[in-house]
Length: 192
Image (cartoon, rainbow, N blue to C red; front, side, top):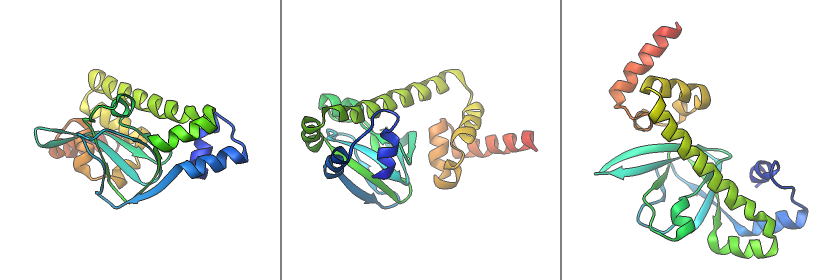
């Protein structure tokens, strides 16, 4: 909970009563490595906040998982379109290591917002994070090569290479695991 409050501090200052209400509206849940958090076809009724671990967003394309993003500590997860419009989601979320999430159910969040309307900022931050994430992924695929995307990932989220199976990273970069191995070798050789 402290991590969430710290994450919200740049946006909003909470008093003790508001923190108590926030605490009562949130459910803490742990997921085992590879456990499914949310699956496509369902309507999203929750916003998640990662307190520990790593989760991946992926799409099932003709029976093949395509990883779109990784979420680590301090990030919100939300199937935005489904959550906002009540339509079935097209995305899936999975824990890629033991992961702990704070879960904001839509029902409890609505009750919380009646008590503390300014906490709507949580939904706004989650939605903004999703939008920015999508824009970065799209821009990366439009403007950069797979090797440039690999170098960016290494520089911005290098810890993922220790935490996430390589096939998920390859999928995220839009390459096969064999191509990822060749890219890694080329980058290592250039930097040696």
